[in-house]
Amino acid sequence: MEIIAEYSQIFMIMAIVFGFYMTWGIGANDVANAMGTSVGSGAITVKQAIIIAAIFEFAGAFIAGGSVTSTIRKGIIDPATMAGTPELLVYGMLASLLAAAVWLMIASTRGWPVSTTHSIVGALVGFAVAGIGMEAVKWSAVGNIVASWIVSPLVGGVLSLLLMLSIRKLILDTDKPFDMAKRYAPIYVFLVGWIVSLVTLFKGLKHLKLELSAVESFLAATVIGLVVAFVGKMMVDKIKIDADADRDFHFASVEKVFTPLMIFTAAAMAFAHGSNDVANGIGPLAAVVSIIESGGLVGQKSALPMWILFLGAAGIVIGLATMGYKVMQTIGVKITELTPTRGYCATLAAATTVVLASKTGLPVSTTQIAVGAVMGVGFARGIGAVDMRVIGNIVISWVITLPAGGILAALFYFMFKGIFS
Image (cartoon, rainbow, N blue to C red; front, side, top):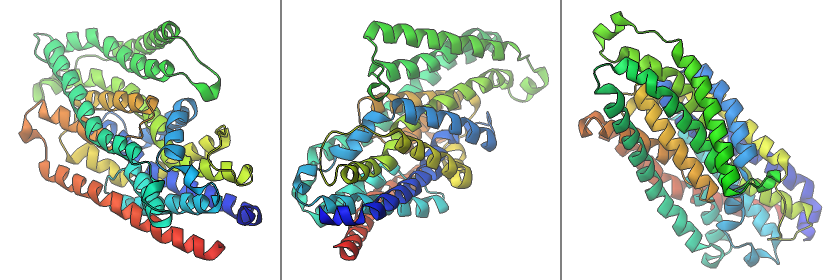
């Protein structure tokens, strides 16, 4: 308790700096993965991706970022084991933030699409095992997260495959694909607005003091979906058939119809990412702030301050703007060839999976979901359409991430303990 009282300001400054550094890493690595499909398909430019991410990452973090934050804050480590020595938890959370941030910076500079969720979970487990002992880790919670790492890419892959098959049946394999694309485009846009808003509303937005019943959530989501569909229809109606382009590529005009749809799916993906992955950076920061503000109490219920969500969202956007282009190439270009129709399917499938996960409180990996969704789209054209060598390299980088985060966190934990104790 005395240590926290004595160094409270230093701990607070360190927590803010490390939290911002971590969310910068999330922007540089994970948001780049989230926006890679939209950029890789040629639907939007890198500059447009940054603007869309800036608006909708903020919105996702603010509106739906609360529930996963509590999982990262309290779900992985049992705070009760440190009730008598709250400074150990502060050291550990600071060490975890710094370790995950350093690893993300290394990965981002090399263009590796690693998982920020792996990074922070590995760091938290590494600090807890090294600093307190095996009993400090809630292994059942870690088990659930590990299971989600397997389930979430599968769900993303299956959803994107089904969406791609529906586009093929309803549009591409018909006599007049361009006309059918314009007919069905509003329905596909409606799906984007409806699914993302429904799942967000369905679980309630407690930190915004907004809780709707199931019927109210359905009605609100349907209204939002219809508004989005109307805007999408106006954009699609302006597109004219391009006979010259169709001579070179039979579905060129159809792809033009799906280009504005990619703007909506990119926005949905950014919102979904903000709602889930902002927690990776601000969860440990929120834990440190609550311990300092309560004078050393561990495990008490505390509201998540809005300025922390704001800091996290700002860090993510700056990270994407400064370093995101390197990682964006990997998912958008190297796994499989993407067009706006394929990019739409992959991005909507990934966004749906991420939002579902974030509202159940599971800190899943956006990277893995995005990779799974892109693979699903590739498999719709056969296994030869997917570069399995690139997939192999991505999986190796995922495997390295957990131990890297854990080892770095343990080192930083002992360093902070040595400095302050």
